[in-house]
Length: 105
Image (cartoon, rainbow, N blue to C red; front, side, top):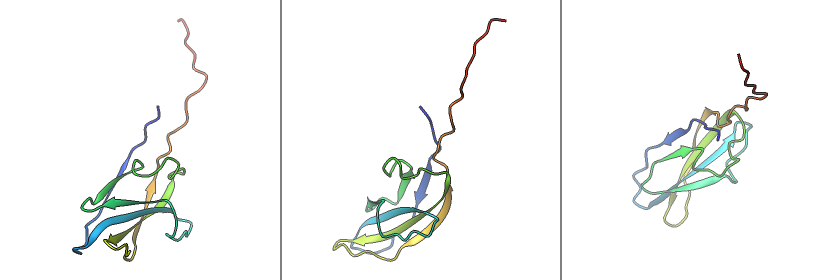
């Protein structure tokens, strides 16, 4: 079973009394706008996630830079502006060695 190093993403919550979640999106650095999946809502008062565990398998299928975007969601579904950060992610395990040989010496 392959093992990949994980990343913790943490943030500071705003002081809004009606906050119910933080919406977390990830996109490649190809200029994709944060308007579609994948995203997850992290319920208040949590303020961190572990990647890649928090997202469905296949979300991080490249060893590249990804943009992580965060926005706040209130109790009636309003969404605030998105803050984003770009970071290198390498959640792709290396290949398997081949042609193993055991010899008597």
